[in-house]
Structure formats: C-alpha cells, structure tokens
Length: 421
Image (cartoon, rainbow, N blue to C red):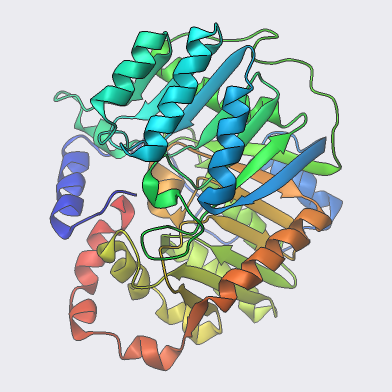
C-alpha cells in the first residue's frame, strides 16, 4: 500500500463515488458461514474448490522465503535461469538498487531471446525510474501498465492489480507479499527493512499461478497466451495439495472474501493471521468472534508504530473492540513494518500471497493467493508465525480503551474511508 493520508483517502472516495465506485450491483455474502466441518474434513476441500478456488492439485512443493535476503536472490536466480518465458506482475516497482538489478536481469534475458512480459500497476509503479523502464523496453521486454487513470472513467483509480506473481518458463512460480523496492531488502533488521514472506512454487499448481497472470494480460492487452511455452506439462514434484485463488472486483461474489470466510468457518483449534492491513468488515469480525465462542484460539499480528500508513493503523484499531472483548489476541509487530500476509487454520490449511485482511483486497483489488492443504507446510508456517509473535506486543482491551482521544473522535471518518483503504 502507498502511504495514505486522510485527504488522499477522501479524494479516492470522491473519485470512486463520482464514477460509481467499483460496484457491479452484485449481492455479497451477508450471513456467517455455518461451521459444519473442519479444514481436515474432506468436505472442506470439496467446498473450497467449488466456492473459492480452482481444484487443489496434488504434487506440489512450496518453499518459504523470509525477507529480502532470501527472497530476492531466489527470484533473480530464477530470472537469470529462464530459457523461454518470464511473466511478471507486481503492484510496487520503485526505483532503487533492487529495482535496477531486476530491470537488468530481465533485460538481459529479453536480449537473449526469452519472451519477457511485465504487468505493472499504474499507481504502484509510479516511482519506477525512467532509466529502468527504458532499459526494459529497449531490450524487447513487453511492459503494460494496469488500469492507468482516464478522465472519463474515474472508477479505475480504485481497481489496482495488487498481485505479486513471477512465473519462469511456465514451470516455476513465486508469489507472496514483496514488491520491488529497497524497503524489502535485508532481513527485517531495522525500520528501513520490512518483514515479509514470499513463496517458491513447483508442481502442477504453477499453471494456476500462470493463469492469474494471463487473466490481467488479457485485460490489459486483449491477447491470449497459451501453448507449451506458457502451460507445459507439470509432473508432481512434492506432496502438497495447492491451488490459487484469484479475485477481481468485477466477478460475482469476491473470491478472496469467500475464501477467508469459508476458511474461518473451518477452524476448530486455531486461527493465525499476519497482515499489514487488518481492517475486517463486520461479517469477518463476526466470523472471528464466533470462532472464539466455539473455543478456537485466534491470534493476529499487525504492524505497530512502524507502518507505511498511519491512517490505516488508526482505522484498524477502531474496529478492535468486539474482537478484544471476545478474546481475540491482537499483537503489534515491533522493530519494523510487518508486511507478510498469512492465514493459518488449525496448522493445516494456509493461504498466502497478495491479499490483505481488508476491504480493498477483498472487494477492489485484483489479488492472487496460493492456498496449501498440507500438515507439514502448516506446521512450518505456524513455527514462523510463532517467531514473529515473539517480536510482537499483545494489546489488551484496557490499553485499547485508553487509545488517544483523537483516534476515538475520528472514528466516524474511519468508517467512511474504511472501504477504500
């Protein structure tokens, strides 16, 4: 998320309102999903495939990459090893050392004959240097800007691609929370280097990640890319069941919101959420409270004072009351910005990728999440969550009630802008 000021948020609300927002007149889920079975029940898998994600495919291997020191070398190694195609989609691409390194690696592959395509969000890539763009374009790489603003259609300002996808030769994929900017370098060692997680994917589910890229390539270019170059046969390489949920504002009930609601209803033991922007809507709050009532332990890690949008943090804190009263444990991450996006249910079902726990990700952005049904992967993510929890501070209901008076007085403003954050 770019830094959001109250005035910028109100301007977005105004522009969206003048153009009718991103609404399609659809009906959304308004009632809680009945908790009929757990995520371990075969019925959960059948339901999630029907309601929120394509088939969960067997035979995948998912590798967790923590922070820039692990993430960027792995991605650059994959780019430099590409032989046929590179498809790359991201929200943030800013000028800086890592941005220039990626531009150089992508350009070198394009000059070597690899088909290189980039989808860059128009807003999120506004700080990409002209030098890096010229380098890519002169190499033969194809670059499209997603949803550039048009005076005749102000609604476009509200629909961004927030997806973070890299697919190499149709066989190797990456997704997670990182953009291309120097704040993601390092190892979350100080406030200038953010905490984040990315994932390396191998196996049949890579085709679904590729499909998410193709979705926005078609929207942006009107061109269908297919064949062995982009969708080769993918043999099993691991043991994880995995599938990709992609969500866009123009598609019926938002798939990402359905995914989260359905996942929460499947919890029996624990729900663990790490997100940089925790602004759940009333139904998601009710699902979390209902989970507590049936004995589920609910833990949330959100940013503390180190956050790129103070307004978003204040808006988040404004909705914590019912959650804290129900016994939901909310922790603020210390030392740097927490930008990881992770949902773990019963240490068995995980959803990772680009989606935040807020209205923008669930209703307005184009998002893509990798979902993994695998006990081993779930335990790995739970262990990582515990390490992040150790760097966080729990907020009590008493402390929340004593939050600054200005936050309390501005709560009506937060309610107005909450859907646009």
